[in-house]
Length: 206
Image (cartoon, rainbow, N blue to C red; front, side, top):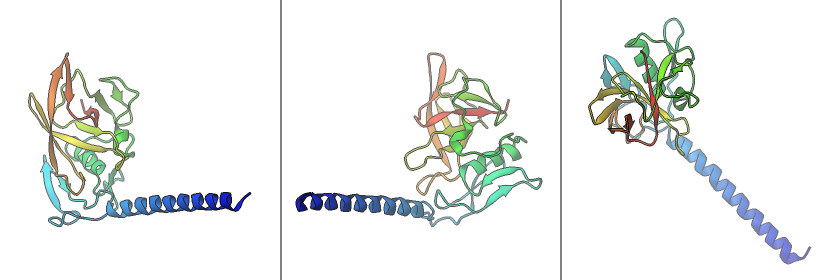
């Protein structure tokens, strides 16, 4: 092997190491960044909203966790103060509902193997796809898919519904998010669609 070829190989390896190092550094920095509370108006654990006397708590950074919340008899409500913890606490406190499977990431609440209107056995809730023949209604549990920066997805509760809009209440929407958000609701070809490409569907206690 010539010296020139050896030099090219060493140079190529150095670039591989540099790129790998930058990727690791960027990933580590992102993980740290997502744990920081950038919204200094609130402190972690502060009540910032409520629906039917079930409170939304401020979580700070989206990846921040303040321990696990369980009921007095051990039912798992989720990690404080993640989005899953709020929707499960809402269903437990307001709707007196316990899910057979009390674990899983936000996007896992939606079972993609089911058709519109089938029973989601893990959650003991009826599942509707987006779009659906069934109109969303207050107290439905809305499920969002994951993203590049949030592979776990997101969940929220439907707080209000009109003929052309759905309002949700949510916990841990991110440093720039708010506890309330609204999306356009359309009815096309006999189906109701919430106009957000990340919304997989909604679950309901019948």
